[in-house]
Amino acid sequence: MALMDFIKKQFIDIIQWTEEDDGTLAWRFPMQDMEIQNGAALTVRESQMAVFVNEGKVADVFGPGQYKLTTQTLPVLTYLKNWDKLFESPFKSDVYFFSTRQQLDQKWGTPQPITVRDADFGMVRLRAFGNYTFRVADPKLFYTEISGTRDRYAVADLDGQLRALMLQNISNAIAASGIPFIDLAANQMAFAEALKKGLAPEFAKLGLTLESTTVQNLSLPDELQKVLDQRIGMGMVGNDMGKFMQYQTAQAIPKMAEGAAGGGSGIAGDAMGLGAGVALGQVLAQNLAQGLRPNAALAEAAVVPVSASDVMATLEKLGELKAKGVLTQEEFDAKKAELLKKLV
Image (cartoon, rainbow, N blue to C red):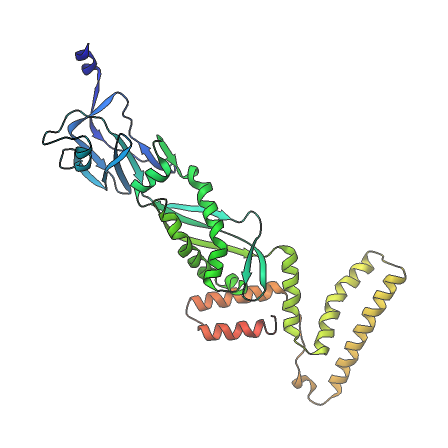
């Protein structure tokens, strides 16, 4: 009976994994009712690593290459099985293959706005999203900490944990960078680098290497964006009361037009219209008086209200020019100060 069982057994001569592009990070070589023969060939392809596990303990780890399995090539397994000089053949051992390819275009983002401390605005809530790239760097650690004895472990199984790590470290990355929100929006590469630096140790604890991170967008919630628009507008007019009246009138005219289009009437509506009209009359009178003064046009240029989106777009373009070396840091800072004068 024992002889028949021996004959029925299948003996493994070649151990290899033809990896498919399906997001698999770890794969166990099928060993049911099979044993490995002495001198069997192990093939580990580029972008792979193989690990022998004996009774739950990680033994030998192999990088890319072709190997003949003997006591010399399996020193740890030989020790764990108490082999002396003779290789007991055949033998059983679990063999796991790990993909070390870069896992590209992994998405991350903030489902809800997160609160961070900003150098310019104090506490702000912002949204952010981008992508990142990682790979398995330490298969032994990845096996013991993550994949375990599963037949297959995929990127999708790890996605939730890695997204959570990204979100946990966004606030720390912004604080570590010391870059205000306005500059982060204009120089997203600096934020991405700070995020990668903060996350790399956390990925390493799982046996992974964080290869790269990108930040595709940084934005404020709508209500905070409106406040920022107002502050940017006031920063543009400064403390000049004439300019302030012009700014206020420019803000009021669209609302007056909306009221007129909607057929608004009544004493309150007439009073609001009259107040805006008086303000507009004061501004026109001031402009007329300035126009009658010699060289008035040269003394002060007319103020054209600038939207917050235009300011942000300009800052982003300036950030790109600085990143390419067209602008120096001093020139960038000077232009930023000019755009955000008296904003804080």
